[in-house]
Length: 319
Image (cartoon, rainbow, N blue to C red; front, side, top):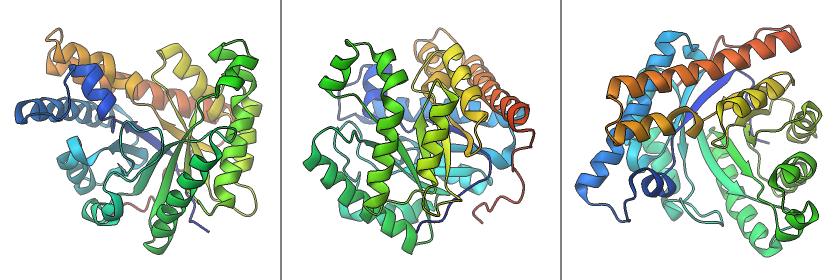
C-alpha cells in the first residue's frame, strides 16, 4: 500500500498547458520559439507571486508548487533547490482519457526533476464508459506501482464530470449535480480505483459545499487501513467567495490538510499582465495576495473547527 501524507499542504498549481495556451494567449499549437518564451515568462510571473506570498506569510514548510515540465522546467528545479514542496504533472494535457505525457518514459522524467509528489489528473465517473475506466485504472496502477517501488508519493486529482443521464436527472443544473450527486460518485470512484491498485498519498478533491460530503470523501480515501492518506481541496477556477466557502468547509474536516487553488489565484492577474493592463510587479502582488488569502482562510477555519494547529513541522523536503 502507498505511503500516506498528513502534513499541511498549500499548493499553487499552474501546470495548465493546452487550455492555458489557448485561453490566455489564443495561440495555436505547436508554438514557435517566441510563443514558447511568452508562455514560460507568464509562468515565471506566477512563481514570483508564489515566492512573494511566502515572504508575506504563507508557511514555507507547507508551501508547494505544481507545474508542468513543458513550460516550467526551470521553475521546478529552482523551487526544489530552495526547499519548497514540488509536484510534477505526468498526464497528457487536453485529453479525456488518461495517458502518460511521455508514454513509457514517464519515470525518467520524474527522476530528472525529483519532485516531492508525482501528480496525475484523471476524469473518472464510475457510471461513464466502463471500458475506458478499466483502461485508465490499468495505466494508473502502473503509475502507482512505480511510485511505491521508487518510494515516491502520488498525488491524484480526481475530476468527476457528470454523464448526460446524471445531469438530466437534475434538469441540467450543474450546481444541483455538485450538491446532490458528485460526492457519492467521488466516493465510488475512489473505492474503485483503490480496488484496482491505485494508492495515492494525497487526493485532490473538487470543492464540496457540505461538511458531511467532505467527511464521506475522507472516509473513502482512508478506508481499510489507509489511515495516513489525506485530501486537499482544489479551486475549480471559481470566484473568491466560492473558493473561500470550499476552503472553510474542507478545513473543518479532519483529513483535509490543505488546498491546491490555481486559476482562481493567477488567471486574471496574468491575463492583465499579458494584455499590458498591469505591470509585472502588480501581477505578482495580486497573485501573492490571493494565495495568502487562501492560506489564512484554511488555517483559521481549521483551527476554529478542530482546535488543533496544522502539522507544519518536520517536513521531509528533498535534499
